[in-house]
Amino acid sequence: MRKYLSPDYYVNTYRDVTVDFLAREGIRYLILDIDNTLAPYEQPEPDEEHLAWFAALNAAGVRAVFVSNNKPARVTLFNERIGIPFFPKAGKPGRRSMRRAMEEIGATPEETAMMGDQIFTDVWAGRRVGVRTILLPPIRDKRDLGTRLKRLFEKPILRYYWKHKQTGDS
Image 1: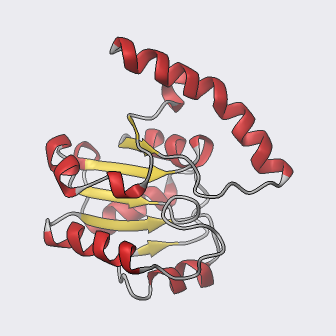
Image 2: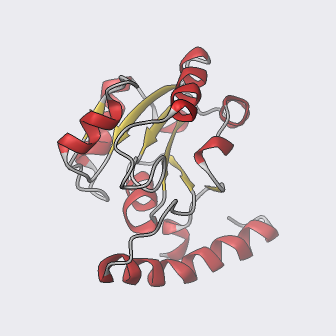
C-alpha cells in the first residue's frame, strides 16, 4: 500500500517543476491541485509568479488543468487570470474528475502527472488513474483535526519514499 501511495517525485515548491524538468521526464500534461500546492487557502488569486509559471508551461506546450476538492467559487476566482480547464469539488481521490480532466485536455496517462500536497487525495488520485505523481510540502498547513490526522498518516509513507528513493526502488 505504501508503494501505491508513494509519489514519483518530491519537490520543494511548484516552481521546481520547470519546463525543462517536464520535458526531461516526458510530461506534457499536468493535473494540478490549488490549495497548499500553488497557493495558501487564504490567497484567492494567482500572483505574478504563478502567471509567469503558467505562461512558461503554455509556451512549452504543456497543457494543464485544475482538479480541486474546493468549492467552485474558489477555483473559478483563482483560475480567472490563468484560464485553464478546471474541475472543482472533484472528490479526490476518486477517479471521475481526474478522468474527465484528462479527457478535457487530451492527456494520456504516460505523458501526465498529478501535482499536489496531499498523499491521500492528490497522490492517491493520480495513482488510481495511472499517471505519475508529484508531491510537495504544503505551503501553509491547516491545523484542523482532520488535516493533522492525514499528515500523521502521511509520515510513514514519506519515510518509505525517501528510503526507496535513495536505493532506487521507488
